[in-house]
Image (tube, rainbow, N blue to C red; front, side):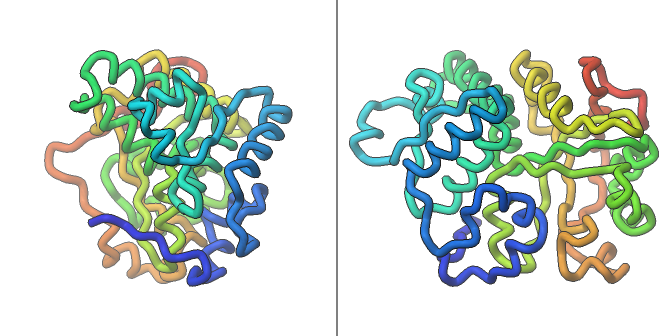
Length: 285
């Protein structure tokens, strides 16, 4: 079923105070009733480039004239450096914010999408394209410092991962970095049960390595080592993370909420990636 975001004036301001949307206030686009223009987004992009030393393609208004060039959305980014952006549209605004925060990762996805289009054309979709799109829309990168948590995740032991190991989400043993702009869009409705499509990265216990993990994932995508099939992605019910959903203070939530699906018979996941090694970790699988 297609999701329709609420109109801006009808959004409950409380959603911006709870993760994941509470993590995006540096761009100052939620605390005003005024939609940022395409020009304003490009201004943010220029500032982002100065701070991060990376380039963000130009945001351009999606008009019939623009679409008249006949290019696929991804091709237009790769060939002309233009991100078609619908004005007054939550999905495209949140996509722009992802570009601003994670330009290297977005660029890697674009490069792979264009390579796939070159192989299968614009009328078909490969398994890799499906995986790339799933991650682009609903992706989460999970940083793990405790291998035991991977075992709980492997088995869909949601009660164990989110309730028995509740402190792990606050003491740094596990951390979720939301990348998918569709996830952020769904978060605009209070009470939504958010489920991400995740890649896990095992890192050192004391390392503060978010940027390194992002770079490693981006490079793995670019080299074709990651996201060749949607089955590589693990479901992660984000609503189970402490503080991310109003109902998860009660233990029974983890036994009854429909987002906590049991492991399907025969389903397994690739091991978590090993930071900077280009190899999977030796943790449980």
